[in-house]
Length: 113
Length: 113
Image 1 (tube, rainbow over the protein chains, first blue to last red):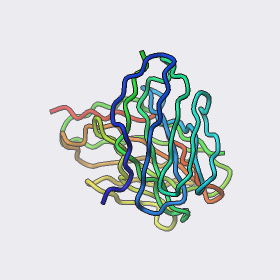
Image 2 (image 1 turned 90 degrees about the vertical axis):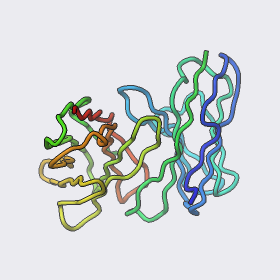
Image 3 (image 1 turned 30 degrees about the vertical axis):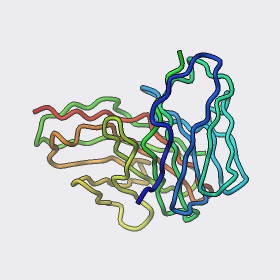
Image 4 (image 1 turned 135 degrees about the horizontal axis):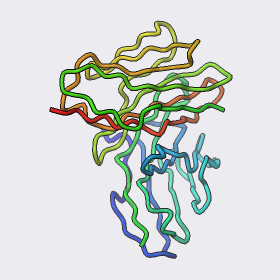
């Protein structure tokens, strides 16, 4: 049972560089989410998707873009990384049934220097 | 929209003592409530959830929580903690009008030998 898989697990970027974080889920979930976790701030929603081909902004979308070309994958892009984007990023997915929880990946620790 | 407030950012407790982690929510619609646990350098895993029915919900690892609609609270309790319970705990809410999950800022539980 893979569940939700994030790649990479760690990454160091220089300011201005770009990168893409990949999230893959094998549970056939419709909904997928990207969160960032910072000390004392909990988890904040960056972008989310309610189905293949759809995306929407969350609480802190600036500086990020996302794509959901396939149902099982949700990509998070940083076009020009900034030190303020140093964080731990979590992907999650959930089904369309409102009584189910979100399932999380193991996280990606990103440092922008 | 919904929001979650976790009243304690850090809770130290001695081993085998009881603990309560507090969570209050705000919402104008019916809600579903969750507690997640995050061990160091790991993703979030579900402890328990309240959907409907009995207001006392039992979860994994001996934890339980009580939904109190009048006080808009969903406090997490354990009668006797173990060293292995040391972790970050997050309260989360979603509603039956959408499927965004809103998280609190987390409570760091430290169990002291």
